Length: 226
Image: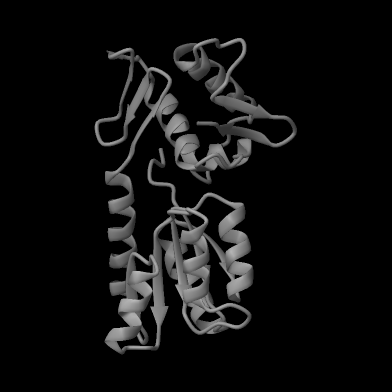
């Protein structure tokens, strides 16, 4: 079972660096989506749920500083790791002050970058607590409480729930949920996801017949609404 399914957006205008980043991140099991300029990166950052954004500074149309500043002004809290050939202290400070979470200078070693990525994802996971209605979810202990009492979720039900919670309201297709929970090589049917959502609603929704949190998006998939 794949319980460490992460989506990373890489924004980089240098084709060789972009390809190298994508290949190395994918070998670690991450889902990687790419963009080749700041405007495309901003659009994709807005349109999906990401666990990490890796962004170059010097890009056409919109630079990395502007992209980070725009996301933070829109209250997008996705962790951002900046890549830059600029090594001056003031450049690093500017990036961090604008809201970036880390700053890696070029040229960089792949091992160092992957270590920084793992650290960013760990920090994100350590804050993995959610509350809605009378339900509390704790990622580190894999516990779900309702009205203060433990809810008996199966490990797979928990993984499906956390995947939806981490999506921050984005719609997840059945295929996306299957890959995120079981991995690429799973051969189950998409109908399985419907059954898991029905079980989660019966255990967590105030009115399972009329769910307010775990919603079906017709023709698309499912989403969690705070």
